Image (cartoon, rainbow, N blue to C red; front, side, top):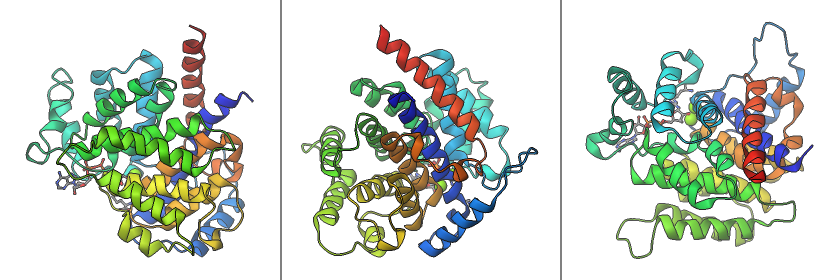
Length: 348
Ligand code: F2R
Ligand code: MG
Ligand code: MG
């Protein structure tokens, strides 16, 4: 298979399996024991795909919104904020109970609907939380299609990741988190098997210098967390989940969950994941480790899975995971659609 097609499919399917495998644990909001994940893996292996499509694992809002974004980019061949806002909102109103949307984002969808999708698509989100905007991780969980759409144009990626965030999340930390997560997927797409964690970390650090400039008086939550990641990965000895939770965080805030996803990937790329994860391949290790940290497990799983999938390619996504997950065939179709746009652009 063409290498970039494999990476595009890897991003979509890695994101999907991270969401589906992480979703059952989101409700507990605490560390997930690796034995629990290994047991789930055994149960998934025993699952027989069936024609009535009663999936073993369901995807949530993370995948639903990423797919809406991708579908719109494919149909329009551009980022069309009004159309994406309308489709996000429609998907929410048609969604089934397994999707579990965030607490306040439905208010944005109601306002968009009440305006008959005719007003400024950014204004309902800008008014959230008394004008502060949401700092939830919803901006990052669905952003990976932007990285694929903007591949080979980092300036456009930064612009569109920010715009895509502001449709629902206008807080600066949510906007910056979307840029950083999209950049991580982009750097994974351009990597090869010899790329090191230090190279990707260095590129992310440069993005942080732009989104959190040294001259700014604002706090620098992503820069600080990248520094802590570096300290973890250059330390000797094992890295405990408790330390990661306390120094990086795994909660619903964009600053925590997006940093945790990036860390999960870098830590596994550095081969510093907990020993019990064993010698699985990079994508499997990343998804297991991301979920095991606890907290927002579906969202950290989906973001880490999209980065790892873009790095490793689709061959790394275990077939038995895929066929247990609702929506894997749609994810593959969307990946192929985005890859066709990429090929078309590359020929120009
Ligand atoms: N909704 C969920 N999970 C609920 C648990 C379901 C469980 N599986 C079950 O079985 O019961 N997950 C999804 O929501 C997260 C993404 O949320 P998003 O889109 O960012 O939502 P929202 O509402 O914008 O923000 C989330 C919450 O953060 C707090 N918050 C945000 N900005 C704030 C601000 N400026 N000031 C104060 N608080 C702020 C609010 O509590 C928001 O409700 C993902 O995990 C996705 O999987
Ligand atoms: Mg979710
Ligand atoms: Mg979540």
